Image (cartoon, rainbow, N blue to C red):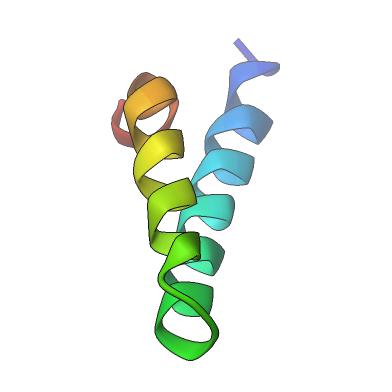
Length: 46
């Protein structure tokens, strides 16, 4: 149970940082954020 908490925190932090980079730097970071949301949606939203 304790091992899943860091995975959720890391996945959420990564998605937020990629979205912010998408606004500031390049739209390619939005693509990476969508890919991460697609593959790790259970860790992010559960």
